[in-house]
Image (tube, rainbow, N blue to C red; front, side):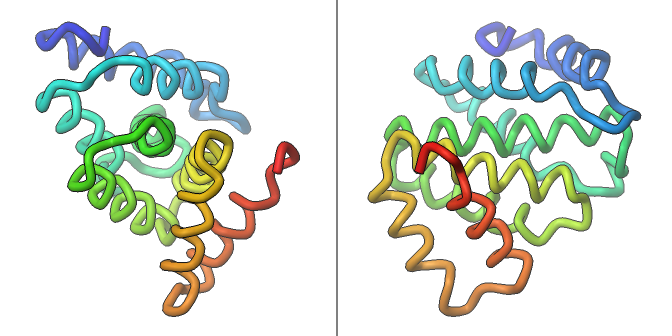
Length: 157
């Protein structure tokens, strides 16, 4: 669905309908499948814009424990997967900015998406994750430090 330009609304609806929200646990399998699928294609500009729009969805538009909260979760997870697959420099900067902003989000699921996104980066490119940690730590907030710690506390590492 991410390949078909006119199907963005269908994809949003599908993700929300199958999010598992409201409820105690979002559909992590679907979120990871979405991120893997996004990372496997060569993104056109409209696809990149769509993922960034999802990742940056505000709490006002996607409240806590609503199906819409699943959209920024999936978007941030996809940005982590894409980052690890060698995005161009400008998109890497934008992805990192979105991840860093998400690390301080009011929604715990969004913050968890950032931690998991960092884990995806580290699985594919440990040096990139090391550099992110070095860059973020000196002036990071407590929530950003939490995202780093949770990202590094990944059993495969």
